[in-house]
Length: 122
Length: 147
Image 1 (tube, helix red, strand yellow):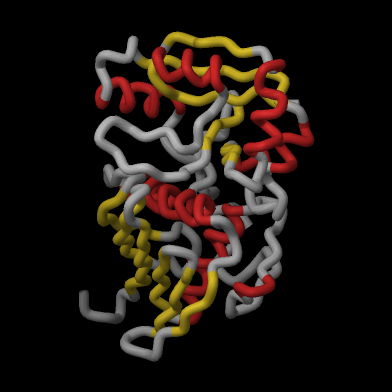
Image 2 (image 1 turned 90 degrees about the vertical axis):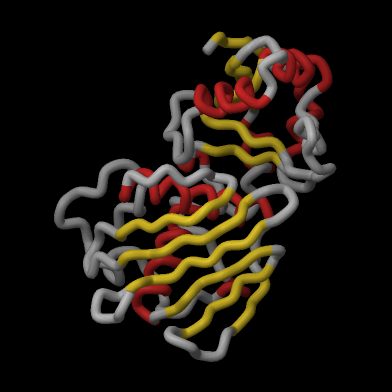
């Protein structure tokens, strides 16, 4: 099992907790896409900007969404993590878990209601 | 081999072309990820570009290798989902920051970094990594060539 984190705004974090990750989420003014859902392993390594920076960036883009936060999802089961890494290209040691349709997203959504979730202030 | 950009590169780290098993040419159709996954893949791409003097470009499910300075390009299907290619591009931006202190957005831009491993090849990166457009051009620059 692993604890995963996602930097975002408070409004979006609350929506994600309630409805689950939406890989078709469209940024304000953005394009309709199917972009998957990315999370970091809590504590890193962070091969890109740390989640706090992503949260601050989204807050800058959307300052009316309650401020930057970290969505923390605990106890993500190994079979869900494995499904996001079917071909072995994204091991947990990389620090990024990328959920796409056909690559872990369905498995994540199936257990989503049962996973402990916390919103951490930035 | 220490993956490029995966934390600090120790002085005296192995040169490109030593360490992890690899072939000079990336066998894209049969590529099997190793222990470090996408980090190994990025190392393989950098090594291939440096050793074989290849410009690497890609986007929308295809990668293209062009021998420098003006050889015939060879295009191959990228064997992983598109989000992996987007992670590779964003990692290029992170390498520009970590190795050259350049502020390049993970969503696109231009930058450069020098591989700290021998022979210290400089790479120029030009990419666009947005939902609407994804393209990458990675070009090794050799010091004996005019800029």
